[in-house]
Length: 141
Image 1 (tube, rainbow, N blue to C red):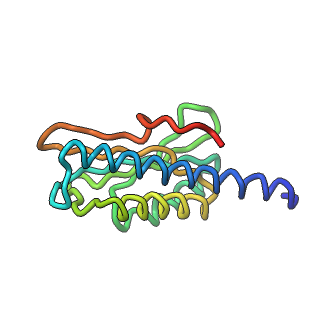
Image 2 (image 1 turned 180 degrees about the vertical axis):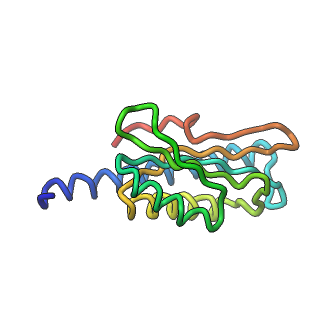
């Protein structure tokens, strides 16, 4: 890779990281408005993707320390998905800072494997409510 193409990827990952953190902040505000507290047990589901199967599998392996992970071929040819969940256990204490920190970590760990942190969903299974970052529309930079 030339220095210019590496910079393109570095800039892309930085833009995606900023966008995902902004989504997390908006999503958390919506969750609080919907009655989520630090004591609410939430299910967390997420997905990363990449175009090198081995990199996606290594990412999934690292995340399997804390999540149930599966790797599948993406719907788009040439891509692989690493999907994770906190199910059957849940998480609690998802305050605004923890949410933003979790998203930043997911962006950073994905980038370290040449992958992209794509989507996540938080679900309150008791009240059957869910919040997805895909529901957030942030203008491109």
